[in-house]
Amino acid sequence: MTASTGRSVSKNAERWRWLLYVVLAIAGALVTFVGARAQQKATDDATFRKLIDDLCLAWSTGNADAPAKFYAKDNGLVFYDVAPFMYHGWKEYHDGVQKEFLDNASEIKLTAGKDLKVPRRGMIAWTIAPMHLMEKSKNGKTTEMDLRYTGIWEKRGASWVLVHDHLSAAAPD
Image 1 (tube, helix red, strand yellow):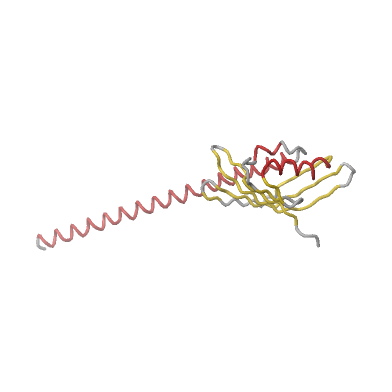
Image 2 (cartoon, rainbow, N blue to C red; image 1 turned 90 degrees about the vertical axis):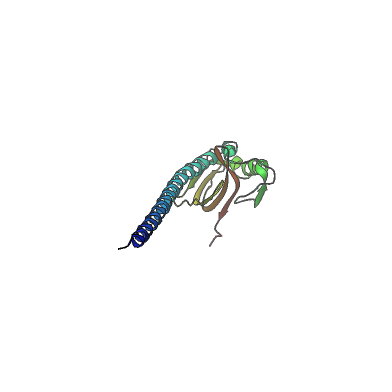
């Protein structure tokens, strides 16, 4: 073997070694990214499960002031509810739900189903869950209904707040 052939083999081995280092570095970065994303997903699921359960508990108090902390107060936000159709801004939502539902109820219970979905893109997340509403009116009538819920959350500082939510009931059979 000549000296030039030896140098060529040595350079070739060195290139392969560098290529191996680059491939290992990329693989390590991918494993780290995938692990971090899985950890964020698990954290998001737990965070939003608690938020949704606490939101339901707040509405179940029968006082629209209780869930206020979950909602953004910006002008121009739109909230859809079972009835009436739509509210513009938190104040209208608060006053409308208090008048339409809560003032006429002796007891109200809103619960979120187990099937919670939480897609997230940066500072925006949306929650999708089935819910169940039980309302006992002051005249003694009990109404129960299954609902579909979608909430759009925005991270503001350390807190997540609802900038839109939508409750709907299936059409009667």
